Amino acid sequence: MLRLSHDELAHSADRRLSAAEERKVLRLLDARLRTRKPLAYLMREAWLGDHRFYVDERVLVPRSFIAELLRERLRPWVSRPVTNALDLCTGSGCLAILLALTFPRATVTATDISRPALAVARKNIGIYRLGRRIRLAHADLFPKRRKPYDLIVANPPYVGAAAMRKLPPEYRREPRIALAAGADGLAFVRRILDGAPEFLRPGGWLVMEVGHARRAVERAFPRLPFVWAETSAGDDCVFLLSWEDLYNNRP
Image 1 (tube, rainbow, N blue to C red):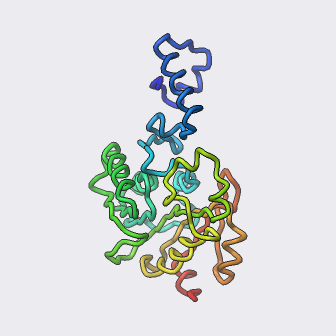
Image 2: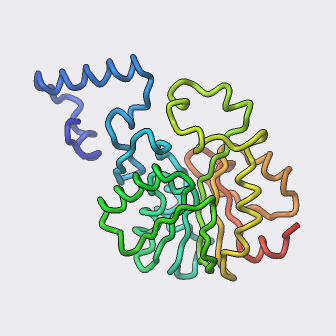
Image 3: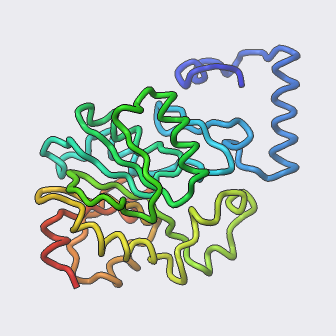
């Protein structure tokens, strides 16, 4: 709204708003209080680190901890070159874009079951001018064309039924399809773990966000040697699994 970068904002606490800017801020505050819409929808933008993305009610508000890991290039785990990556449940396309920026020699396939979400992703891909490197596909998780990937990232729905009933109004404004994940919140985790070995090449990695569900995931899949990455929210949100561990520990 004030057209300030994050760096400029940090040094602008004493700046006085013009009358026009003040009216815009007051209108925004009124809409936020009256509708309980997430601020990102009202402003039509959300940030992951230093990167801005267009968002609206068709997609989940971007807030993935996988973005933090991508800034560090997922080291020390993903040490081999990434030339082909897959982003499941892409939503706004934010992680697909960050994948393309992190691995400049990689092509990225991004899937989503929601065609409206893919339209938002296409808009963001256009903003970043990555249309030649990111391919969008309408799919229920994995794309129809089976090919091996060096890296698969997934931020799927992971909210269980009981938690869905207790969500605050702001979260209820977001697409239910991007949140609800069955009775225990692991419906998509199960499907992704089952399908990932067929889409990863040897030496490849799966990176998945599951909320604060480490205990539930480890109870459900006791044979899998999960690697839990440290994020700003702790070490119970994002796990990594190699193709070898997925393949050798299949049910």
